[in-house]
Image 1 (cartoon, rainbow over the protein chains, first blue to last red):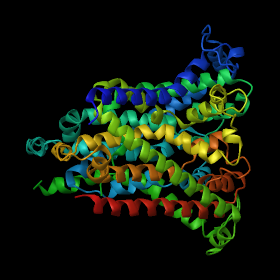
Image 2 (image 1 turned 180 degrees about the vertical axis):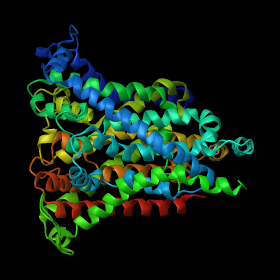
Image 3 (image 1 turned 60 degrees about the horizontal axis):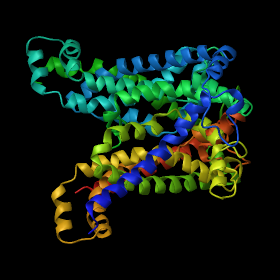
Length: 271
Length: 288
């Protein structure tokens, strides 16, 4: 038998190595964003430098990046709200009536390649002249947020005691009142997890906006991708853009990190 | 739920979601299926041509190249993530004290936007100015071309996905391990089973349902992997990273061969669903 103390030290060493490997690229990106322009691509790499905001100033002054960031916000909030409006009552009814086929139908969107839907969407939405507007992005991103909302909320709703729902109904509450006033307060933490996951996934999603956005509605993610080509000559602004689009998901997921994995895995485990 | 009135009243609650799913998911899927059986260019009327796109696909070297790359990436990335994720998950389960800080670092990679992963890769892996080759030089290794060499590009992409998603697999494994009955492990230890033997004959079989769950989740994402590849290489150099998803995208949106692109996408979707069905079966068999 190995000495438990030696074993623990060995575990710690392994863990530290893993954490360094995981954190280093992210730390390096953040450091680069604050480096003076001439030092971003310096060889040997500069570990010590005077931090500057010049990359961010350039990013926001030159590229209309503020507008792109606002677009991302509009689309992510819009599709999260739409996902909640559609998904919360549906998930409640499904949990209450133990009916799973609509949930399975939305899971389809989770599994199929996004490219599969993209051509039909492009044809459908260009016929009604919606391509390039906000609604096409909100609607298509809701195809991502709706399954998240439904599958994250199902276990929360299933764990709400049936007695409190039944007693509300005996007292004469309508279903919408029961949901809003009795069930939702109990399942509120589920709604928070679902909202944050929906927002982050919509914010991070690249493909739909790449094809369906217009010049005016381009999201920050797509705008950043457009810098990649020119980024070869301007790494500083590229890294600043990476920091701007990485911060909202990083901050939001910190809030729900304990429930994050369960939320992400929801849906694939059942059935 | 005895009242007949409430029994029907759930319909208005499900109806909006069902209508949305029908309009945005089911109808487009049927549309794509129909497109895959027709000859259609952007702006022209579709013409039904039966299996024409599919027979063309089977004779297309780029399709077979894409299929090969898709599976190459799949087995390499999935294998690496399962092995490393299991090791890291069990390591995390043993070191409870560090869990708070560790979790913060662990969840970061897989919640970053794929575009950020791509930008990081482009800057860090740049052959002349990137820090990756500088580190290689410090330990006396020759520089690598990473994403710009056809022989290393898929390995690099698999490594990027492994960096991003191994922590996710590890957290699933940790959760699965911690929910197992612990007297089994103690009994095995008391019987004098050594570390590898315990892992191989006790831990691994008990973890199998958890590992299959992780496999299903990762399979879906790796098979239809798009963002990071498109951002870093756009399928290049040449065709060296044109997986089926990239091929379908380029044919559909860069060459407007809508029918052909749809056939490739339908085929890829069938592969994804097929893999999910296989693993769902396996999971039922592995659950005790």
